[in-house]
Image 1 (tube, rainbow, N blue to C red):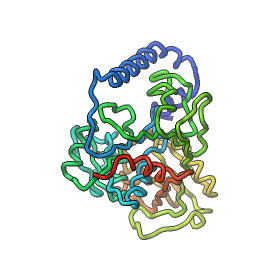
Image 2: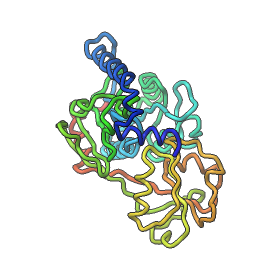
Image 3: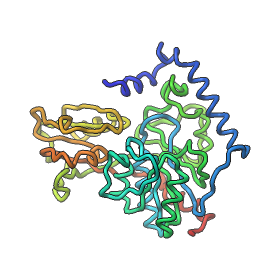
Image 4: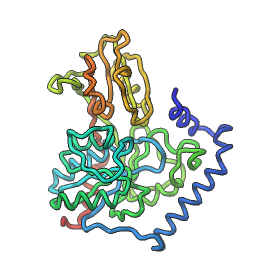
Length: 336
């Protein structure tokens, strides 16, 4: 277990390490609340863009399923006539300014999640630590876009938003303490102020939280795609009984490994830190017949040409239909 995984595990309990970090956590929470108050009172200005902005984010550190949800929203809203553009911080990438992301971009530069979005969404994708600058650059280059979706921009308050969607997975709020003593970026009450709360997988609603609207999300992926030859596909049945090795460098690797078990696949598993920069040695078979990995990890590994590697693309399924609800919200913001 590496350092990031030990930290994530420590955030699930109120152990000695978490207790020792409580003074810093108190300062962090105070700074977050003062900053939010400054934006609410207008002391710090927010930038309103000429098109509606939909923000997808979470209040805890680490992945919770935001990127599959952004992909779902982009595809569904495009199917209903909107022309979305996507912006992201580009976490894990080396780019320091604003940059356009194409399906041929380097994940080491733009980040794995933006590259995945660019390859699957069919929408313009821009990355930048400054979400406002990224959004403005995207709209200047793609004036046909009449909607912006921000992947992980909940705390980027300088970007004014029309709809907020918060995602939470089965890890919930952890020990309930702010960073760095716990996983919270904001207080739990923030869940009730967003227009929609999406519970991913086995996530449950925290006690005392009454969201404006509640949705449930599951991630489904029945077919596997060969990394080097995407035209080759198979189902789980074709992988059963083989010696398999599974890798995951995502926010919650245990979720992927559990899905494999539910498919009846027995694999030697290895978890890496989220956004891990894979090296060829990481993909060694070590006696296995095939490697299994997530689509997010695969965008960083194709150049290594690893032998017999299978990738699981997943699609988000929402109950009730979140896209329909978003469309109703956007009715008050007609396309530009």
